[in-house]
Length: 343
Image 1 (cartoon, helix red, strand yellow):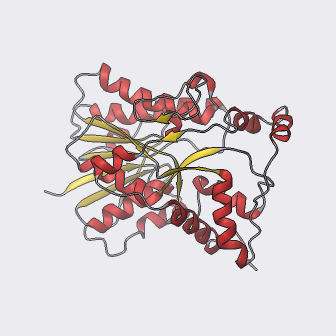
Image 2: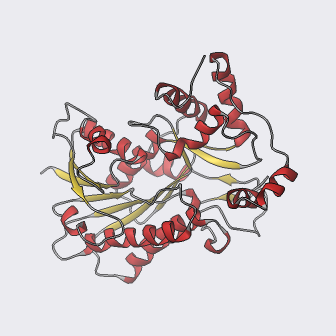
């Protein structure tokens, strides 16, 4: 019997790569939720993803994170749900991020636990944002693991939204003992690599470094991981015997400056003016008086930490893509898409 996988937010960066890997396997029927079935420009790349897919193209269904309507229909006859949908990162307003993220997650889980649902397992796409931020009492050499949680009271809106949405998922499972599905979460750090459609918000950092929109680099560290590894982790978390787990995904922790140096070495010979100038801390402090985004950056200025992504490799059985390869692939993709110009 062929099983069916539903991917929520199916036209997103991570979701498209998951769909591609599932369709190439040829083992599963794929369904995907989109906000507007009539948006051909956004939906067509998903339909055309694997033209020779053994079980045909993905079936699209309309569902909105903010509405419970449509989700029970979306999960009908579905065996697995990969919940990648989340509000857009561009907004900095808490009301536009936190409530949609939390309620969207709960709308999906309620549908999966409703009478008649056959969903066996749900994988929620969370983030390292729900693991490694908002703490004032960790030592500089602290290595974050799946046991750690972000303090939502000391972070900006996006990080808070990811943290509270994941907590809501785990709380739902704990407080609804009658639910019929297993739950795991995947917690990627900054996701880089090639997009299977037009570049999304996840690769904005690299785009801004390659176009001069970031004139100077703050002293910020963050984990990085390749989108192909993120998709692979979702599929394997869905298939493996182990459930009820969080899986951090991070190949390495890099400074903004490390990323920029790799980009400069690779792309300056091709005429790309990569930003490598360092932003002095005092300038960042002054800018933070006027910029909410800079205030958020200043909270983590110079913070050194580790992120342990080894559990995912060990349990799910894969090896991380080398970060340099992911960074260069992102740059090449941005050039091919016309976002970044060469000579």
